[in-house]
Amino acid sequence: MKIEKVEGVVISERNYGETSKLIVMITKEHGLISVMAKGARKMRSTLRGISSKLTYGYFHIYYKEGKISTLIDADIINSFKVIRRDLLTIGYASFVCELVGQVIKQSIMSKDLEVIYDYFISSLIKINEGFDPLVITNILELKLLPFLGVNPMLDECAVCGDVTSIVTVSADKFGFLCQKCRTNEYIVNDKTIKFLRMFYYVDISKISKLEISDKVKNEINYFIDDFYDKHTGLYLKSKQFLKKIEVIS
Image (cartoon, helix red, strand yellow):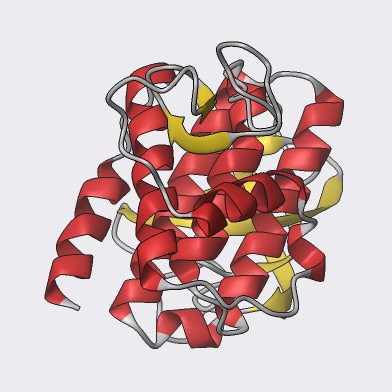
């Protein structure tokens, strides 16, 4: 059996037996894989640190397609130390990991995996660099929707196609609404329209500045939450945990 080098992030870990860990990773090459880290819970094990959640690196493994692979060693690229310092950022990172894992399960094209993986890594890096985790997470959520087969209309009115008088956005009606097609929907801030469109197209890795009011952030987050609830069929345990943390924070 040949040792393979894969790039990835540990997204979960659990004890296995008396001294080992079973980890789940999102990898660039194979998507979601399960990996056994034998003896990783021993104090002196070289696998102890590199098999912990949110470790990003090049992992040397005995890869078994469709089965549990075995971890040999790893070269750490980023341990996301800033994320690990705060419960709120840990919550957002956990949500990002679970969300991307669910999307990968539903998207089987290899070309899709590359794009999804790049979005995933860029998002974790930006959160670790100190950018607002809610905003980065919302951007990622928007970018992942096409891979779930539900693309909101954020260039024109979702009802009539008008591009000149957009006044709000509706999950029920699948995107932007103009003044003529709006019925009883709440009118959002002009900047909410602007930023939603920008979020949909921005390159996450190239974000260098984010200045958005709390009102606009809340309106964007409400729409994205509502859209996911009504159109994706995803249920993410980490989202409920994240909401509890936000209340405490």
